[in-house]
Image (cartoon, rainbow, N blue to C red; front, top):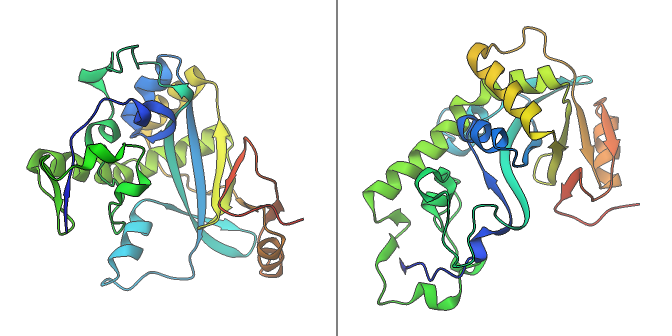
Length: 253
């Protein structure tokens, strides 16, 4: 399968989005007073994965170990630039005023930043005309056609692993200890931008993983999941969709 693409400068990719950032990018973004949220997800982790399981190794590399009650989990923390409405750098002519310093996730759009997930044009905000067959090849049989774009995607993915100790230390410093159950959504932690930038910077400069990690609470908006977690002696809480929880499923009363 060959996917063609060229940007039409419609500006839709710069509206109402959460853009995944590295720690360094988050420090810059939050340091300018823009909102950066930390999205947390808890993966049950009974034991180490098979070395041949690339997907499980990826999950391990981008997370850190914690306990929730009697159960072991790994916590994934994703910094995201959040803006309701247009990006603060989007100009009236749909050009970016931060183009030279834009985050990697913007540089690689509309490529899929996550491994093991195929690019599907219908899941992007770009209009149908952006995918016309006369445009340059973006992907061919799942492989990125442009070597420079492939390099940036690889950097983006590597940063997700390299930043784990910094994000673990940041959560400890800020007292963040709730995460959504895996594959059900994300717990959303919104911290004042300059406070977050300083916490990330301090953690980056020291970056030790906590010797005695704080216990974590697993949150879910599904009563069935909450029952399962409490039966397994986890620290769990039932929440609702809202500013602090992005769920993939409707609330279960």
